[in-house]
Image 1 (tube, one colour):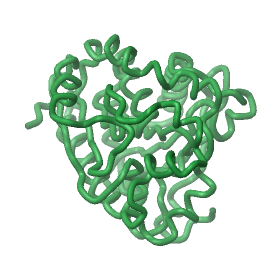
Image 2: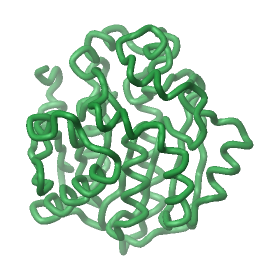
Image 3: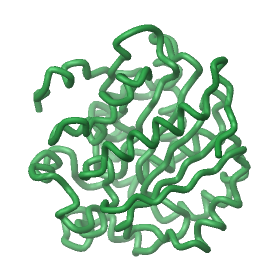
Amino acid sequence: MAPTTTAAASVRPITVDAGAARLSGLLAAPPEGPPRAALVALHGGGMRARYFHGEVEPGQSLLEHAAAHGYLAVALDRPGYGLSARTLPDGTGLTEQVRLVRAALTDLAGRHDIGAGFVLLGHSLGGKVALLLAAEDDRVRAVDVSGVSHRWAADPEQTRDAGGFGAHRLHWGPLGLYPPGTFQFARDLAGPLPPREAADVPSWPGRYDALASRVRVPVRLTFAEHERWWRHDEDTLRDMTARLSSPVVRVDRLADTGHNISLSRVARTYHARALAFFDSCLNASGTPAEVD
């Protein structure tokens, strides 16, 4: 889909070397000066990098917003999506995804100024990859995750029915939460999970238990009012946050949205809060700063 505004023209396609595959994606650079850091956005299951470059209404694009805010903004098609689907037609499990995305970060750092390092913004399954990366890559300075906890509210087997009404309700919530034109825009984004990725989905609660104590960077968790895949009651969130070794853990709830926050009417609010969090985690020298 062609950019619809002058501002969107600053977002350009890229390819990144991940070793065993090349990943496609989108990049937006800050208009002036070196970047504060490189923000890398990782989409959820069945989506694409363009999830973070919504063009349905002005101000919806995370990439444009982050670049204007001084970040090198990159959204990657995760392994098994976009360009890499040619070499990875069945996708990959989480362990292999993390290895490939980590290699992609190395390629990005070799070709672009990444300022203070990487901050990761992950949605749903992309949030899992972001947390796993944060547990093992010291270039990651902070992580913002939406649309995932560690306790299922729905049967994960429903992820295999990406086109069915039940899965549609889980992914989107009430349809009025999204601007007119959203579902036409999303038609080219949404699809079934690659088979190996889908097979790995039910393992997440156990994986989280094993990785949480190794996450030692600031973490922000956002839960939509109409999140239906994951539990986000107070007991679940207390347990989830207590397992992290992060110096700062912030939990935010966002009203009037469903699971796919970055395509909703409140996308701009979510993106602004995420960027404010990243700002607060980086001081002038690029080291983590204390956050309320």
